[in-house]
Image (cartoon, rainbow, N blue to C red):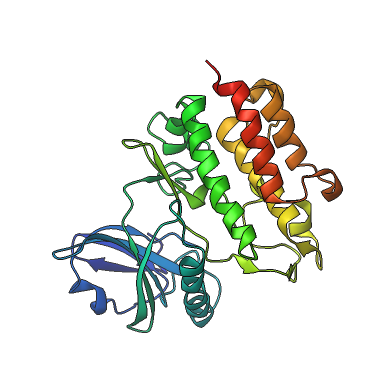
Length: 295
């Protein structure tokens, strides 16, 4: 741990922060069994086991995490705004919001615990280990059958069709937004904090997100960020889970020629060559699945 950081200990877990922060509000809620501290969003998250409600996932804004370079007040504001999204965009493939409230010097969002593993495990398996280590959740996911991966992907797509229908656009969606339960073969989208209501325009030049999944317009000041942008994002996640991620060649693709053509159209650098909506892309992709899944 850097000498400039302060170590916080809560029960049997500890983590560094930029400065001391009072977490007494959480210590009486139950046993903290996991902490997710290395976040650049300004949030810190906990897995907590309570006596009456079982396990919960708690996201908190208000502490200065080691990776965050903004103001804590801004992080608190973003989380307050985000909880409204989890209600409005509620879906079987989205983690379920249970409650939200002010606590300590910040704000809390409580979610139902989902016993899955993050497909971008940057804390435990930073690249290149993410891609090659046999215990990495991403590596293990890529060893699943094509049918199992398509099932997970289609559930992610179905959620984003709903996002589109509700008048929102996805921002900062990447493999780190996905949890996968390898025992029950279930998937959940776990982070939609930065999704925005349409119309939305790029006011930053470089928007939030992982460049591995971002369209050209997400780097272009003033560009519209819309359904066509999200078509690119969905195509990019398809290449991550079924192909070679940034290597979009057919040789690295596991799911047949037809789906490869559809995914490749989705990630066209030129917006006019993509599908015009997430719903159109998903309909074409779903039709193409039959080639792969037929016995």
